[in-house]
Image (cartoon, rainbow, N blue to C red; front, top):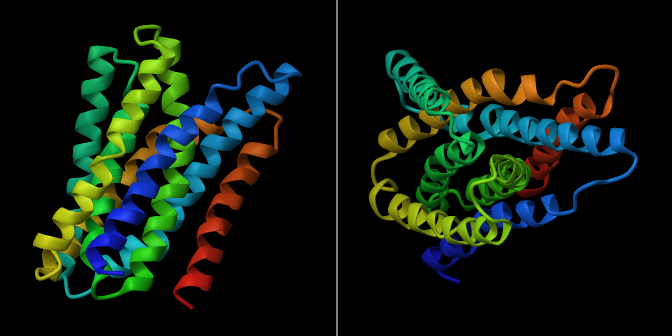
Length: 238
């Protein structure tokens, strides 16, 4: 199987985790009520654990290769700054799609990095695909719930929209393979940019939402998410 076919395959599967998470979110009103609330927070925390794993095991270790400390600072602070701008913009306009925008904001650069790294380091590409899919699943779940709560879009249209958004994965992956694979410094900058944005997102949005008084499942969900990514790295990268 050629690199380009594999890139399309894995980025498609990672993107389809978004609508799959939305389909899971359609099962509402789990009883008892406390269980539904705890499950929702645990899903948020699991996604946070996976994001932390992506930053700690892939994006930062790979991103710092060959870059000066100055460029590392610029890349990560730029990522955090862009996510700050998006966060402020969404809050100012009171949009119900903040989770959706955040999901796409980290999905696109990660998919580009996946495509660019695949030819040189297939194992890293596979691990990144696994992490992207496992973070898109809970983010799709939460984005669906958020959009439904906004009441502006029908449930069927939300699912269809998520399916269309999944196409962004292969497009970004191909772009990374075509334009970044021969420019490692640019690839590493994008990886660190994504890492900075994810760190901002985790501490500004995910961690506060995941917390639930007198419940253990959300915090344990974050541990499970990080462990999921770690085991994936051990099995794929070795």
